[in-house]
Image (cartoon, rainbow, N blue to C red; front, side):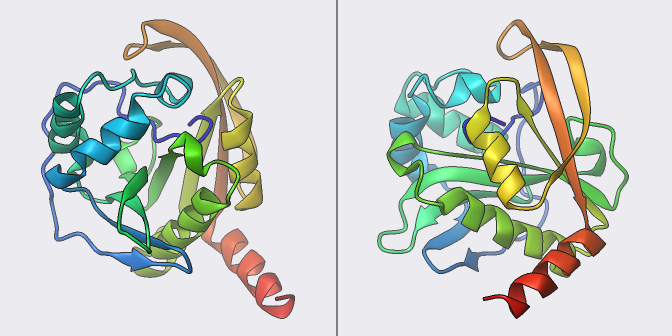
Length: 209
C-alpha cells in the first residue's frame, strides 16, 4: 500500500458487486461509508495525482468517467469504503478489507488484508490511522476475524508508518512480484496483527488515555 494506498486486486478483470448491505462508520473526524457513483469527481481529483496510485500499485485515474468506472467495477464491493470528512461527507480516500481468498495473499476465511489511501492534501493529519483503527475494530469485533494483514511496497514509507502506528508487525518479504497493473517488478513488505494483539493494545490504550 503506498504512501497510503488501497491495493487493488492484481487483476481488475471483474465487475464489483455489493454482496451485502454496507455499513457506515463514524470516528472523531471521519465518516467511512460505501462508495457511490456521485463520488466520481472527488475520486478523480485525488486519484489523478501521480504520487498516489503508482506507489500503491495502481495507475493514475485519467478522467472523471474513468473514476466512475472504477467505483462501479472495483470499489463497489463488500467491505470497501470511502474515507470522508465529517464536515462535508467528501470522499478523500479509500479503505477496505479483502477477505480470505479475495486477498492478494493466501489467507484463511477468518483473515483479511486491509488496504487504504488518502489524497495528498490530507497527508500528515492522522486521518488514515484513524480510519484504519476503526476498520480494525470492525474486523475484529463485528466480523470476528482472527488476523489482519497489510503490506507496503519498498519506498512507501508513509504506508509503513501507518501500519506501525496501528500495531502491525513485520511478518515477511515478498520479492520479485510481477505487478500486472503497473507492468513492473516489486518487493513488498508484509505485516500482520492478531485479534489478541489488537485487544492487548486496546486495553493498554484505555489505561493510558
